[in-house]
Image (tube, rainbow, N blue to C red; front, side, top):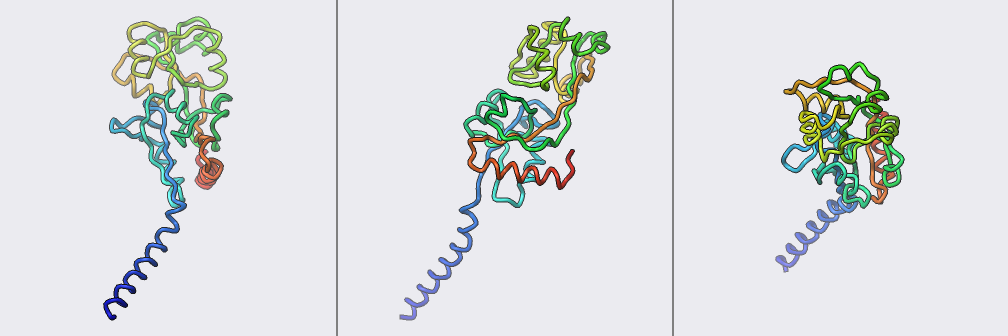
Length: 236
C-alpha cells in the first residue's frame, strides 16, 4: 500500500511539472528567416548554412524574450529567398527595400537601416557622371532579383542590362569588360572588390525593412514586435 501511495505521489508530481512546463511551450513558435547571400555586412551566407550579419542580429534581439524563436537560414539565392517568402517557407526576410511587387506578399516593418547604393566601374570617368547619364549611355550589370530603389529601378527599365546570378558572377563580368558598371550596395561592393582596381561612386540611398510573409498566421503580431523594437531603440 505504501509503495502504491509513493508511486501515485511521484506520478502526481511529474504531472504537475509537465503541466507547468507544457503550457507556455504551446505558444512557442519557430519562425524561419533568411536574406541575401552576399549583401554584407548587413546579411551574408556564412558558408555553414546560415545567414549572418547586422540584420539577423537585430532580428534575433528584437524577438528575444517573445514567443517567437527565429533561425536565420541560407535557403538559396536572393530570388529563391523572395519566392519562398511568398509561401511562408521563409517567414521573415531580414532586410530588403520596399517595392510594390514585394508588398503583394510581405508585411513591412518600419525602416531600420540605411543602405547606400553605388556603381562600381573600371572607368574612373564614370564616377563623375550622374546615375541618369550612366544608365542612359553605359552598359550595366545587375544581379537577379535585386532592387536598387524605386527611382533607379525605373531608370533601368529604359535600357538593356546584363543580369548576373549573384554578385560574384557580376564581379567577374565587370572585370572581363562584359559591362561598364555594376550596381550594388556600397558596403558589400567595397568588400567584393577590395583586391581589385575598381572605382565606386554612391548614386542613391535606400532603407532596409524587415519583410514578414503574409502567409504566416502571426505576421501582424511579428511586425508589431519589430516596430516596437525599432522605435524603442531609435534605429533610424
